[in-house]
Length: 390
Ligand SMILES: [Zn+2]
Image (tube, rainbow, N blue to C red; front, side, top):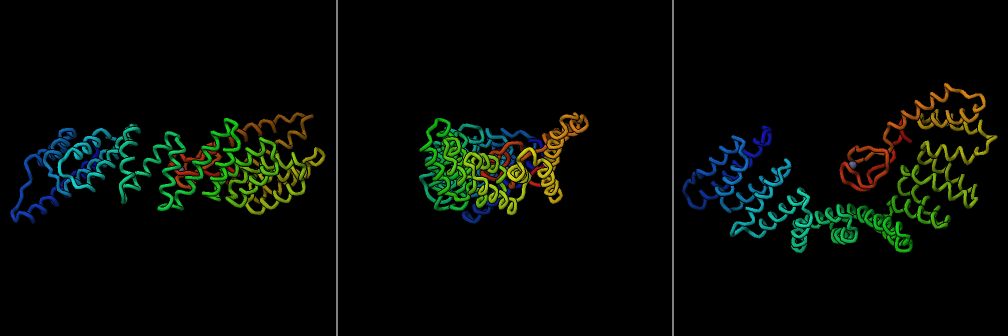
């Protein structure tokens, strides 16, 4: 209880609550109601930063009318926002212990208490409360199902998370469909780890049914089919990324190229890569195209020329590193130590840079994760483009 903004906000919240309550009482009784002694005593404690005593005073001093209850709810939320979850819990529990609380306020207090339990990591308690609230109606029902879904997501209980998402589907279709698709992908990953390939395929198809633009489902499907030797199917899945979201092409191209090589379909491979390079140029694509056009040892000069031309349009650190590698390979016999040093420096520079960034909150990292650790949104982290990326 040390920073001024919180004290001011709290003071204003309770003062307004008390004033509204007083006005209500005045209207009903026709006489001026004075603030109870306990109320001012509470404020006194508050200003002396004795939070525990303050809560007790407020709880005792304020009545059970609507304004007082709203003030309690605001007070509880304020405590929770400050990380003082135990105090928030006490406020909400005290509210629930009140006699004669209106039904809508009772449900709201239960919902806030479930939030407190979640903040405290008491997921089983939160789950019990939210399950009951999910059977109610109105806004509190939907918000409770959303929170319940968060809990199941944290617990990686994908079946239950899917069932919550399906309940939310009629109300929040566009936002919930991508989330549902990711839950199906999570299930598919577990199934693939146990070699249960047929149910894994079913989950991935389900993911694509919920969200046709789910790149993750296509990448997983491609990986699964390639692993089981179904290269044609794998190619179909990896190619889909170009239509779904071409900024993820660097994720699919290297594996797609492997499948094409296994099938010996050079012409189709080349056409597809050139088409992608037109649509969404990236350094990964430039390497792949250079490899298919000039992959033979005697074509090193042409490969180098092609990369130099591409780098002139889109400068890239990774591209320069690749060029150094080509030079080093060509000059192995002469043992150019300066070039080796330059390569080492360049590699260090690239190593220090993030590769992926969240388009929603800006979180960046070196690995592709589908649930952003920064903003907890699914499918917002993408490969970084530009000088230091693709
Ligand atoms: Zn984010």
